[in-house]
Length: 281
Image (tube, rainbow, N blue to C red):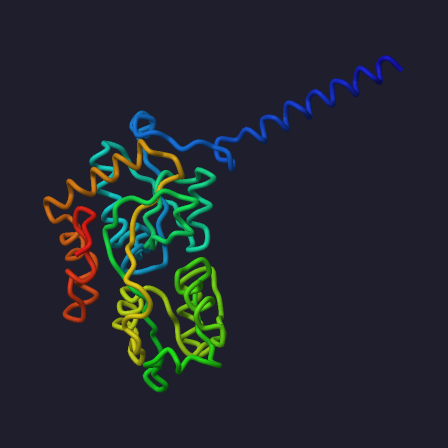
């Protein structure tokens, strides 16, 4: 009997140790974000980006990350003196990846909103956008009122989803996790139109004949910024200083010319999209 009790006690102790190890994972919901010095010492910064949102964050035919946000991420890593690891995120997972410390920074076309500010800390902005709506030229949507009773495709966790849910409940929303799924649904005719940032729908329409952006600007003019875990003041301060300093060399205009201009051509003006040194003009 004593031997059985001893075995049982040993088993419970082992399970307790195992459980403790499991709940103290460095990437759990209570995990503390890394400081700038800790990132430098590790030799690597981990940045969450989109993998299917050309030309802002995507994986090219060689398996490499490219795009406007990635161009910025590469410069951050260079100025920190570390390597960069890109982690693919979806719109709805951006906040969670910071809260759970899966990444150090999110650079994924992240629109600054009051609701999101409660969960993450945003840097100074580096881009400005509004919502846009793209649809087939055969049944072009040119006014938001035209969407009533129709199906609008959006991605979960985006400002487009929030905007239409709050302001146009008569519009039927077809929601997807990934942008590639959403755009495929539009191509397949599963929805009448698709809404997301106007900079994105413009780029997509240019590359997809038969589709146009019938509503070029909807809602407020918002800003895009990098984000870090709530309370990570050290990394936030470093990034804000980086953005200010990069503005002195017109870095984000150079980023635009390298990554966005080849897509937009004359259809867009860099000054209507780019923000330098965090100052919105």
